[in-house]
Image (cartoon, rainbow, N blue to C red):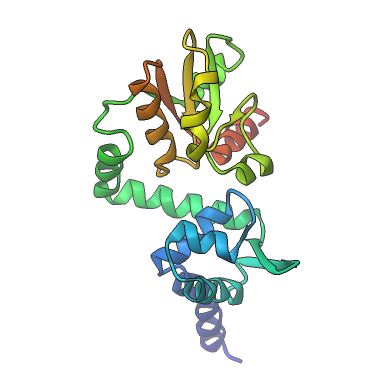
Length: 219
């Protein structure tokens, strides 16, 4: 093999990752799996794809070695291959946010509701996270909370919030978080809480940002 052939072969291998990530649905699947391992059926429901189509996308991710799976009884459970896949997702989002202004405009309009909802930055919450003047709720599905969650958070999945709301203290601010900057659960939670007379805000962070923040503090 000469130098040119070597270069062609290596860069062709690199493009395997790029090709498999050219699908929006596969990126979404990886994003969901970054929260916790999930069955094909759960991923199908979350992405609103047919189970067969979901399996097809997962197979492509498997062939690119971005995910792995195990069998539990009658279910096939997928998870990310390693932490570097999460880092890759963060890098893709970060570059896209820097280079494509429409992403931030769309997000501000849909998630932040044009700044109508109070948003608390991670650094601000970190400084006052032990302050008893607020309650932190995790509105992701229970399995994601069980996999990992922010310190001191209470698990109240969005689908259960309406029933649980009577147990929340009205003399404290309720801060909701979910899967990150593009997750709508926290937005919906804050809107529901405000409609019931609570002082509420969404936390501009997920477990990944919190872990990254803690890691930066140790360096």
